[in-house]
Image (tube, rainbow, N blue to C red; front, side, top):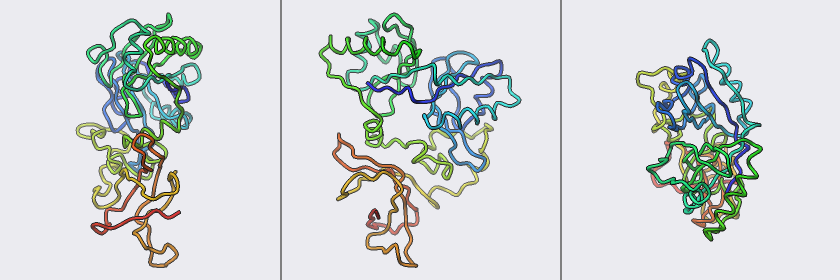
Length: 310
């Protein structure tokens, strides 16, 4: 179980909400009720400004989630982009809670608690639906940031204690081991899966294509803020690439900001140059490795051995 209430939350509605969402970011907005997509809005230079999980609740009605630290920026950006559109942007961060239920037994626990089927044919991956928990109607999003099967439950803040107690009781009934997990554990697990994080790996300096997210960019026949600048950026192979790396013989996790050099290079030398930088890192307890997301120059010599400078 993970309390994800700190994430920012927004509702977008109005007579032009469908059209507004269609041009908001690099990815297409979901076109069917209950569908979920991951969308990146861009800066005017084509860099990643924000990352949203977008759920279509109904025609002209959307629910957006973003990072906790992005709340004010997201509200400002959405409001600015909505200028001239007949849409309503509502920040519901303080009134809504999010409870994550993840792991191999997540579906079993939720089925026990709700007394309803939650198999793939009921709510498929990257889809949402409503379930009854503790006497309340709960919006359930079938997705997971940590690479495990699971759901995010979105509910009124005042119902969180009741819903949590209901889930704990269901897990106990099934003799399923359960424990709350925090953001350090979530960060480590998303690194084990190789998921980049907004604000660390994904920044305004780089576009989504450079960041390995080309599958989430749909520019053909669409217009969105930053589109032309994004497409005008150098080809990926000519610039930088983001990737997941194992850091060997490290005294501890790399938390980000450390330069990466060709082994033996002297950073104090006038001719020395870093060939990369670690943007985030953590120790992966399941794979028992120090992991890091690394931005590397594509001009690296083939077979070059790299080291992290601390």
